[in-house]
Length: 390
Image: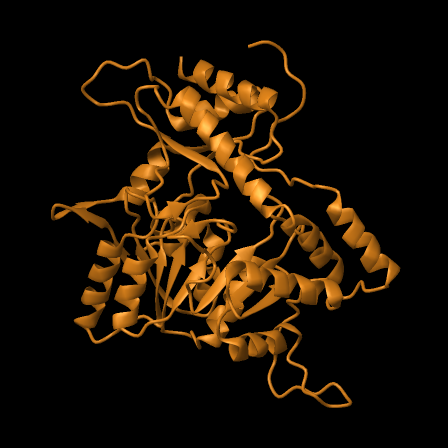
């Protein structure tokens, strides 16, 4: 390939300029602490956008998951079911609480939690008289799970759902915003997310009283007394007013950011989708993904001739040599050393067990997808990808 200028990152922050105005306002009013009008406004705006009654701005998505864990009373010896194809942060708070973790495979239609595998997990544990304290579902790479099927299964058994929507802000399921389906839902504003506050998260729920309890716990659980008094202990999890200002400036552009990432995904499909063995993450008819990351698999047909000779890690290595960041698909939780020995329920097709998540990890990778990517930069990525395959 010809020479190039500058590194292309997987999913860098995309600033509009509105963030600076909000930060300047925070400084001008001296609201620098982890509370203030920007935090209040960010919570109201996010709750309204997601279509829920209450929101709590926090220091990270992991903090939000931890508080959801506390609100549901998950403790040592309790059982939780979790999507296996995710980042470790999804399950870490439950693991640290001493919960037993059982992992649920993906379905090929969306790459998200398989309702068939979930039902088998429920049935299996029912035989020994045990049911989970919670089911944690993940909206992978900005795409919703098949919510109706999963919520029906959990609802019949009266088990609450935690929706990890860290990657899916702005995505929809049957026209409804993600982050609104769980008993508690979680957003992330990490620097690589579609909307960022540098670092931060949000806990969402229609249970406003529970969110107020989480607010109390997130601010060190200080009792309403004239001195520092504590009847219980909490955590220092609140978002700063300055970072909330960044979030407010970002939220003005959420529709543009989703449209840009979907456009980037569509161009990749147009220019790479006809290569034999290359398949992009599907989008079921009930889903409108925000396409946070463009994810694909490389898997040439076993019994057919193919020009496809490079596995995903070889492609990733070649792109890196050209200063282009890419990444494998998440390594499933049931394959992680820390969770060795945990139960795992694979997807079933025609009565046969198929480990969909393991296959996606083996064959999958993610291409640069930042909403600020230029046409020239994407052309560099496309050319490098084709070069790696040849």
